Length: 152
Image 1: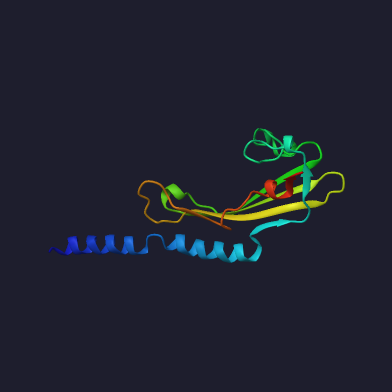
Image 2: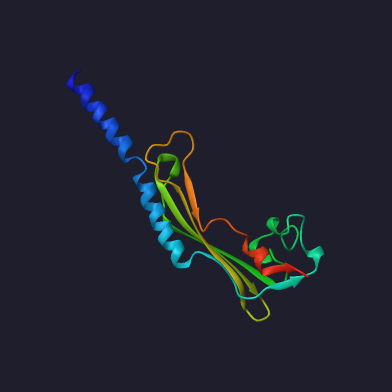
């Protein structure tokens, strides 16, 4: 086999061998961050009448269509903060890692009723064939809205 073909084959093998290294590094970082502060914490539950829930069990029917400041009616504040930890373009093989925190706060006394923190990784595959991979933690559980607001 000619030397140029051997060189090309070597480059291809090294590319595929190292593809996804960033993905695994970001997954390790995500796991460490998640162990530190990921998950849901409920400090107080609020009982609401059954008619205040939609067919999927979410409180305040139609909440997804409203802006965050009015999402949970007039008595509660829904706060969503997103922080990009590592920014990259997953469609180009680059990794992205972000932290998302959601808090539910009662307006009358500014008390935090519950919060959830999650980490989300997209891409980092090195070579993308089709769609990039993704991962998140903690493992999906009930959304904080369903944990704070319960049916009477």
